Amino acid sequence: MATYKLGVLYGDGIGPEIVQSTVDVLQAAAERVKGATFDFIELPMGWTGIKEYGEPVPAITKESLETCHGWIMGPHDSSAYPPEHQVKRNPSGELRHHFDLYANIRPSRTIAGIKSVVGEADMVIFRENTEGFYPDRNMYQGTGEFMVNPDVAIVTGVFTRKAAERIAHAAFRMAMQRRKKVTIVHKANVIKLGYGLFLNTCREVGRAYPEVQVEDYHIDAMAAHMVRRARDFDVIVTTNMFGDILSDLAGELVGSLGLSPSINTNDNQAMAQAAHGSAPDIAGKNIANPVGELLSAVMLLDWLAARHEDRDLQTIARTVENATMQTMYDGISTRDLGGTASTTEFTKAIVERL
Image (cartoon, rainbow, N blue to C red; front, side, top):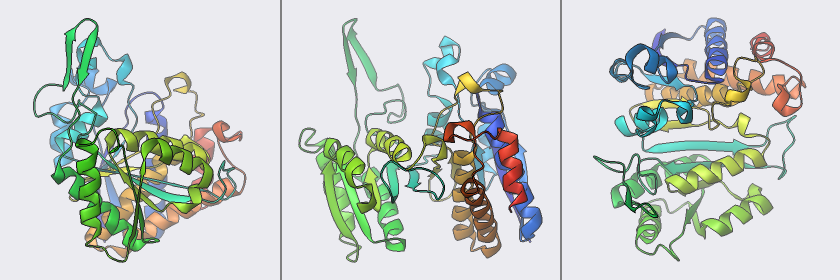
């Protein structure tokens, strides 16, 4: 029986509530399936890191994560941090940058019992996670933003063949396991060199996967097409900013951003992280929806199961996913989905269905 060491970063706002829910469900599932066990390592992040170590992501957290098989990261409320921390990368960006977690994988699909704006849909967005127009993580040193004078700001966008190649390969590998279709999203008609390099590189990679159908859309057209015909899309690959925007749109189209999971990976490590934020307005009220974080953990288990060829771990992942879906299908949900269950009540209902 294998034991997997998982870092647990509770974070800010609703983070402690939804991450605790996730840990409770994973622990209960492992006890029932009895195929693998988890060693949960609690590490400071966000306000806890600031108060205890003077940093949102202290060195002790990074060092400990190096020894973990993966980790579960709660949301952070970096906009409320003291000014000296707001000028630095936020915790999510810092960990993505530090560990070179180049692929942010964000699935969105309709769920039985949850109202969808677009009917049936099942797509996965592969967001390049290390460069583009997110200057906090595309520079070796500095932030990539400049003020020429008080009235002029310049933001540096970075596009490299290396980054485009590896996110494209990740997307095409996933497409081979799904419906064998990849959609490249870009803005090469205006940003000709940067997005042109991204588009052309993705198309070059696509030639190595002749079974996969390839198409491309400008970002503005893609947003419209997703609203009109979301069911037509399978795997979407795009840059950092566009992936961030499209995945939020996709989450809302299929039901709620609160249901949206994701993992961040560099092929050797993976971080489970719900796509939504910290929702400080409802923090501590026991009403937050933990599904996004739970399904992110399911993605992490699937990733670990594939990496370690562990069928028992995959069974735990399916057990957690099925129990979560059955709970919502049975009409039990949190307030954001029109239900009345608290976070802890919803968690208990999932455990009962494992």
